[in-house]
Each structure stands twice: as C-alpha cells, then as structure tokens.
View 1: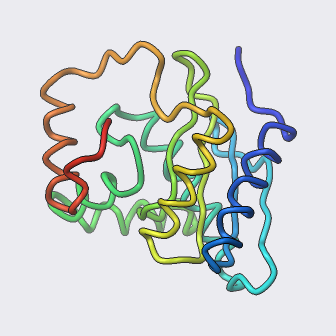
View 2 (view 1 turned 180 degrees about the vertical axis):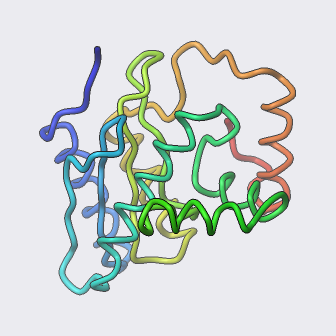
Length: 174
C-alpha cells in the first residue's frame, strides 16, 4: 500500500511557498492521507487565520469526493457539479463533517500509480490563485492528480470537460 510521507509533503509546501512569495499571495497549505487525516499543515506569514482551516477542508474534500467517484478530479469540478445538481447536499455534507467540506479551486487528489494516497488544499488567494499555486507545486514535485491508468468512462470525461468549459477552463486537460 502506497502512502505519502511528511518529507514528500514538505517538498510540495516548499514549492507552493516559493511560488506564493513570487506572486505576493500568502497562503496556507494542507496535505491529507487517503482517509482525510492531516499529514502537514502550514500557514505562511500574513496568510489569513482562517486559511488553515479552509486548506485542510479543501484537501479533505478532494480526497473524500475523489475516493467516491472519478467525476470529481478537483475542487472546481466538485463545486460546479453540486451547484448545478444539489447545492443543499454540499451544505449538508459540510454540516455532517463538522465543516470539513469546502469545494473550491486549489485542491486535488494525489495518486501514486493507480492508488489514491491523499490530497492537498491551498487557501489564502483567490480560487484561481490557489489553483495556479497548486498546479505549479504539483508539477514541481511530480505528484499525479489522477491514476496512472485512467479507467474513467468517456461519458464522465466528456462531462468534466463540459464543466471546465462552463467555468472558463475549456483548455484544461483532465
């Protein structure tokens, strides 16, 4: 069984912080394991005090929903999917998890091969800034946000591409 180590998470946080400093956006970063348990949490100087809770909740949400369905490759898709179908369910999920559900950009699952090993969440900038930081750091450390052998049905992929197009990310790759 693959897992994330604190050392791997430190490299991810370092990449986020480096890019966040260059952008002038203080943030918090959280990484959880495949069960949603916190591995690391860090708040940059001047990041909002609530950003730590939001980063952790984003990571928890990304691992929870990706573990349930390949329809949810990131927080932006989770947010749009629930907005269109059942916004009340997203609110209910936040309530019955004691506020641990937050659907926004700047979070995604982490895979090693085909195994879901955790997720990360970044909070403190706009949703778009958090997403830019996330993608930069994920690429810097080589984390995969989808399984090595993608078995997602084509109709699901088409649906996700439609959601990306609706929210202005039509060029984004799955």
